[in-house]
Image (cartoon, rainbow over all chains, first blue to last red):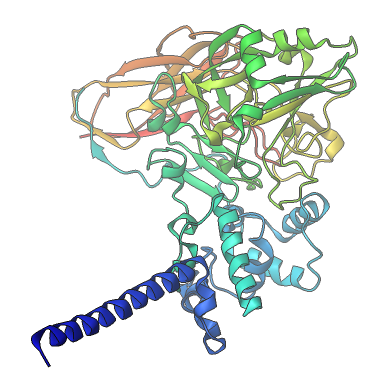
Amino acid sequence: MNKQDNFRKQLKSFYGVLVVSFVMVLLIGVLGIAYMIDPSAFSFKGDAPNSEVISTKVDDEDWDKIENGIHLRTGFKDGEGLMTVVNNCTNCHSAELVIQNRMNEERWVETIRWMQKTQNLWDLGDNEGVIINYLVTNYPPITKGRREALTNIEWYPLKEE
Amino acid sequence: MKRRNFVKKISLGSLAGILGMEIVYGSKIPENYTLLGLQDPDPFQMFNKDMEMVVLNSQPWNMEAAAHLLDDRITPNKYMFIRNNGLVPENINIKEWAITFDGESVKAKKTFTLEELKSKFTHHTYQLTVECGGNGRSEFDPPAKGNQWTIGAVGCASWTGVRLKDVLKDVGIKDDAVYIGYHGVDQHLSRDPQKEPISRGVPMSKALQDETLLAFKMNGEDIPLVHGYPLRLVCGGWPASTSGKWVNRISIRNIVHDGEKMTGSSYKVPCHPVAPGDEVKDEDMCIIESMPVKSLITFPKSGAIIPKGNKLNIRGHAWAGELEVSKVSYSIDFGATWSNCTMEKPANRLAWQHFKASINFPKTGYYEVWARATDANGVSQPMLLPGWNPKGYLNNACHRIAVKVS
């Protein structure tokens, strides 16, 4: 065995390593591109939950959280019938519109009829009584008279202009 | 596998639909991550409003100013109130925007593109007072239904557009025309495409006034989206609901327009005075036309403390619907005595007028400064709430600020 043969042998094995590496790099590249085009092709039947894009697991717990007697998501006061109100009265408009308003039973019925007649509100069935009871209990009309006193004044020293 | 792929595409697709664009790298969204674009929108940022503006309702968006925010002579966008009946439109295609004139009393249906409208007719700019009919509703007793506006649903911006009367002349109107009714592209809250959130209008006499504009600019710039981009009607001095936003059709009617919120009790008050809380039949309700005389003290902000011996310089604006304001007075003794303010003429008809006064206080203590405007017909603002009405419109009771002299 001369030195030349030995060198040739070494060269051959080096070449082999080079070819294998090149093929591997090429394969990784192709797989990578394929993954970018359709990542789901690489997932397996067992891992279905992982491929869901939106998971509401964390949200579910907080979604209807009540803190200090207030339903955080809507701002409604906690009380009997709360969720019936949330589910029926915040689909089209915000809860803020309800909370701002103070009406007695008769006028709430009137408002519900108006929404049913003109605003696509559905028949509330037995829930109507639950909703109205919640509203008149938690948001009763406040008597204001003909002019209220100025309240919530934030006092500040006025700088001369 | 296939079903999962479908689910994934649907959810991404619908997310993209909400955002109005493709979500690049959508497949890489981590679990439990809410896209910034889907988080609770910040209305102040979204509509370029000052943080001191007050949100009354987020669906539909309604926002009002406070008196001291309205100190500018021309109301900038950041202090302009927002009143919506429906959902703010998305994806407005400015290049294809057109407005159609139709109805029983149009000689022939006619459509103009926005560009045609802008190039064909002379442009006019007016400062116009636009006030929500329900401004001040929160004070009524028994309470009236709707957004509980305090005093900030008013503004007086500068509007640029073409005169509706010039366009109507070009379109050709029959002699039996009674009313115009606008139609916009905003969506009904129920998202029912068959329903319009609002479609109101004005009688021909108002439609044909010089100052009634089809406007495309507010304060010299494209109208902000929430205020009606790219085209809105502006009927100064009348309930703001007559100034239709995102307008793409105007119907010339041979009857009083019967669109959404023209009928029933909307934007109507009892034709004859009623006792607070009375039930009023729809047929006994009359459409609000010109808004009543009113004023606001915009400086100083309520709650000022001044040293004894100092004068207090107050200023503000007064307006009176179709009329000019002839006088503004102030009182520091709950209306027992009144002094006149200095007042300016309006920039043009239907623009609010500026007033000011310099006040001396006799001794230390708590005061309220009340302002009271009087219109050209001699009618003044009431000091208490005006006539109760079921929907709580037209509260023009005088504005008050609290002052301490120490």
